[in-house]
Length: 382
Image 1 (cartoon, one colour):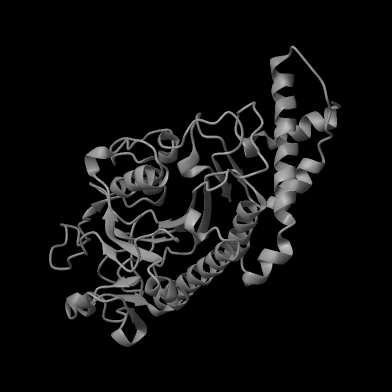
Image 2: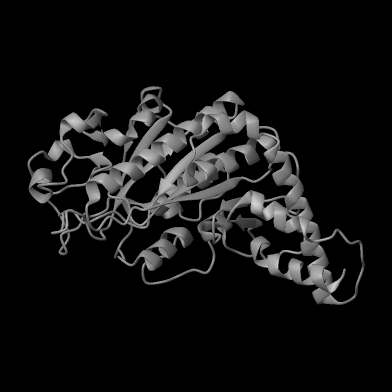
């Protein structure tokens, strides 16, 4: 390995973590279940996503300009409406392939983006922070292949020594970078050099996997409109269809920090979410994989109940989670809905479902693993 390749390989180490073994396999085990996490970054406004018409009057009192009228919501029954920007997902609700988990949060909520995101992604208490993601506790051991792929930066819930995961800003860029490193066969007793040679193997394994996924371009891209979020979902879809053995994928949709002029901004973000997930689901159905996929959204917090003076909402507490998939117990609203008559001292919603109850359900009912949060119980949404 020459100096140039040594430096390039070293520069790509953070993309792959610190594991010396080969990370990538080229064929997904038959029937393997997949979890797609969608991070609604910034703090999604739950009250305008899943609209509480059951508290008509109180809802409008707190939100004189931002309240969604019934005429602009999609009726889900139980006097609850879904923001009309989510129209592309209504058919999945009607076919029992989508459900909502209401009023999800945690005790002593933190309103800092970074701290609350850490709490959600590590399943920590608000007064304690774990240094490993929640998925590191529920994914099975693997000697080869991947536990997960993050399209974006940071491993988030896949952080941890036992998690074999990779984060890539853009798969095609990743391939181009990997091509710059020559595939050199060499043995060494030097631990540092041995590690870099192992990283070199990882890079070329990764490149092969993504190139296999890129062979699906013409079959998958036609389902997606052009946008950054759709590009990320398209990349995930191609990796799944192309044979990646990863169990978990994570993508991010930013733009939910709606402190001002929320109406248009929030509507646009929900539209991007709905169109992207509709396209992703269509691809999974076309390749007969929909029954093997569970889609779940999350956000670091919801928004304040009362709108601010800038026609926006500030950092709040709980919010609903969306789940989709061929095996979801769909067309249901799980959990206790938020009560606008019983706010906390700061004027925020009191959560009714701890997010670790959701994680425990994913662990046992979807991944077939033990539940580290058994004390919280589970929810029969799958």
